[in-house]
Length: 290
Image (cartoon, rainbow, N blue to C red; front, side, top):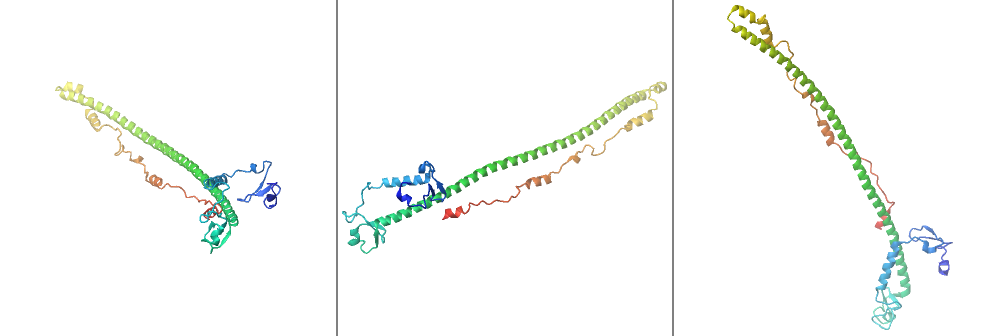
């Protein structure tokens, strides 16, 4: 390009190996590799490949000029502006386009080709912006996935800690119930042993009293009867002065726990509202719509 007079005359684009990108207007410095050191634009390359394929698929061969269908010996060399179709000079003079406005074919070709190239540049720039937005959305999608998994792990950890606390509290309350149960059971068992001893003593006293009652002789009766029988029998019948349990002593109603407030609290569990950060793409969406 440096050796091309046409490019040397365009000082606004090339100045000392510098020029501006037609898409983003960023200043680019050519290194020792020249244009071959520039970054490849795959999108533009694909567009060029498609354009080449379309050109290769045309019925016209390279170097062959299209001819007019109405006048087979006339080459198509003008453009009918009114009908927007290329035609030949004979069609303008004698044919269907004699009353139409025409223009030189090469002039129309250069104008429309320049307009098409400008549209391609605009499309490429727009596609680059769309690709940038897609990349941002993909990053947001990945961040959403990662943040969601982190939130799940944190929630599971909190519920596991709560479950561990409930298990610890349950074990504590069960221990208190077990201790009270053991204390009351031990006290009742001691009373049972005392009453069994008293019953055994009373049973022996009954046997002795029956044997004495069966004696018919006065001397024998007085020898086998228990001393002071009336008082001993009365004491034995009353069960002595042994302890007794109060009514409802075996009840464990004092250890009932109300969990209604905890149940309501669990049902009321919800996520705390957080301020939502709105993401903007610096007007990219409006440009895309345009």
